[in-house]
Each structure stands twice: as structure tokens, then as C-alpha cells.
Length: 199
Image 1 (cartoon, rainbow, N blue to C red):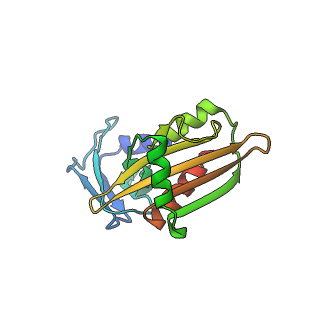
Image 2: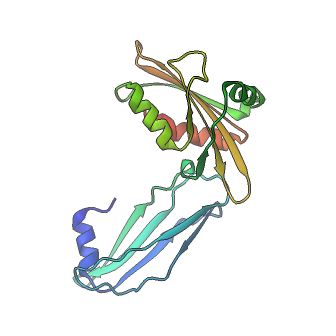
């Protein structure tokens, strides 16, 4: 996030140049050409079209260069592009969920993390976080009504990766057990890291 002070400096100056740093072959990023000169007090909107080619770990970085007071300034901003941004929620019945769950039972397809809750263990907040992560929250699927389960598909240019998740809260111990199963071990690992940070 650019601070207001630095953002103001970008807007006050005449010339600005933007580029994407650490481009990876896993992401295809397209921008429309923008006017390199920004009038004082004006704003410039740059729209990025990002296509996921294959699963990735690192978020791209937007590099903004400009002159302020005759000195070259450089601001690097990590873009909020993570793998879960390419989810399509998938609805399924309890029978379909657990049938698929059993199919994804190879050790490399599952990642599990047990961790202490960082925030209040509110049921409605937890539901909102799971939905906001990009998967469909599946009600009345798990035999334990306290557990949360979800399903989604990560769409990339080269493949589709199905994902199932199960979040088991233990309110007495203020702990969670998060289990993710996907057909790609790197996807399971990355999604588990991203989602466990939310709780």
C-alpha cells in the first residue's frame, strides 16, 4: 500500500514510469499504455489484466519511478495477487465431497496445519473468510456441524486444480486444524499457508 504522502508526491510530479517487477511465467500480465506525464494534482489509473498460467508462489511487484524535486524516486508495491484469486467456487453434495476427498488421499495431495487462533473464533466471521478466500462454503456436508468445508477449482491457462478444504475449530483450546486436498502438492501447500493466516 502506498502511503498518502508518497502517493501525493507521485501525483504532484510531471513524469512517471510504471513497470511490473519479478514477472513470472506463471502469470501473464497485460496493461494498456498509459500517458507517462501526470499533471500536478491529477491521478492516473492503470488497469492490469492478469491471467494465471500455472500455480505460483510470489506475488508480482509494481515498480513506480518518478521525479520529485529533481530527484528520482522509486516505490515498489507488492500487488495483492495470490493463487486463491483464481478460484471458482464449486457446490457439491456431502456424498460428492467425501467421494472426492477419498480420491485425493495420496500423501502429497494433502496438507494439514494445526494452529492457534489469532482472532476471535466467531462462526459468521469464519464463514465470511472462507467465502472471501474464493471457495464455496458447503453447509451440512461435514458430519460435525462445527466444522467448515469448502470446494473450489483454481483455473489456470494450462490446467484446472480442484481443491477441497476442511476447517475444524476447537473453541475450548482456541485452535484450528486446517486440511487442504488438491491434485497438486504445491497448490495444497500454498493455499494452506494463505488460508491459515486468516484465522
